Image 1 (tube, helix red, strand yellow):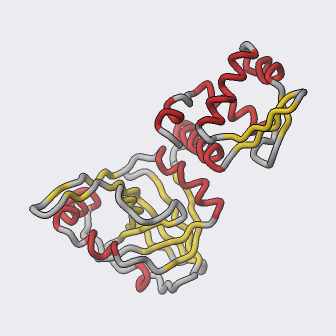
Image 2: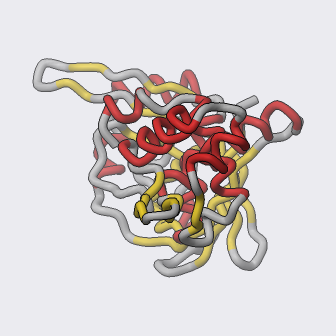
Length: 235
């Protein structure tokens, strides 16, 4: 999504996206007319049309105009935007807010060990997370549903890790979120954090978790084992 398109989407457009979801737009194409949408929004046809155009430009929905209306479907990006709104309301009305992500353990590229061990990050981990992480990350490949749900994590309170530089180069910032790792047989590890570096080769389906101990050993994990990561606000 481009910065220009993203900036054009506000609460009014998200209200349209919610109405389309209630009409069935998450399940597939639904047929609507601007006049019907305008009535639901208590707005003019031109306003309804303009909001649809903005959502389409931001890649939050797809449209196919026909003679008596248009077929619309909410995209994966649109569903993630709705999930983020949902998590905001959960934080308002529910005391304990967390996002549950599921996936399978996978082998990483070895970058985590190097970056986590750098002194500029280590000092911040000890100060802000309260521990020195094991030099390496637990890499989890998320299921499709969890990839869509992952955007809701941004509604939680992060632990910021600042960027820094040495004589050779600049290192980017990262954000951490407190997390609990649970295995398929019910073992849990609570003192963990997800970490999302600004500079990473991972796609949205890849999640990295750090902890004081090596999680693979502590939880007896191997590649392809199923895990659930409960991501919640820090205390």
